[in-house]
Length: 143
Image 1 (cartoon, one colour):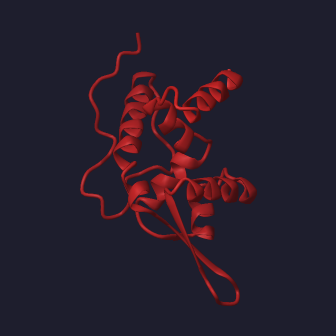
Image 2 (cartoon, helix red, strand yellow):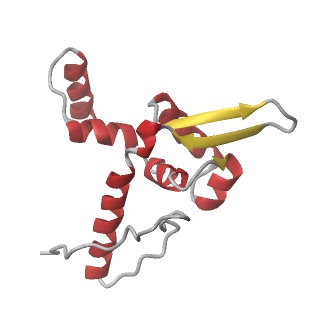
């Protein structure tokens, strides 16, 4: 299946198929990328703060995912010339524009879990200052 996806990307680069869903997944797909984007949608965070918010991510994996998001233009990394080094991460305008997609994913997932009799118990809550809860959704059929 990965080979099929790579072939799709190769075709796209050659002027072939451009799929919006595949593009979105390519940009935010990754075990921690949506969580990173979600946490940063609440404002600028340092690496250590992101580690606290996403404890299941190893420092190596968190760094890798942040670098990929930065390379994609979704995250801005600012390094301050102080000792010890200080690095802050924030969303770019492009990165902030993904928020509605993340809210839709959260809402759908919360409804799905509720339908399965499970309760949301992760660190993904509306960032401070958010005026509305992202987890209010319509019914999802579990057919």
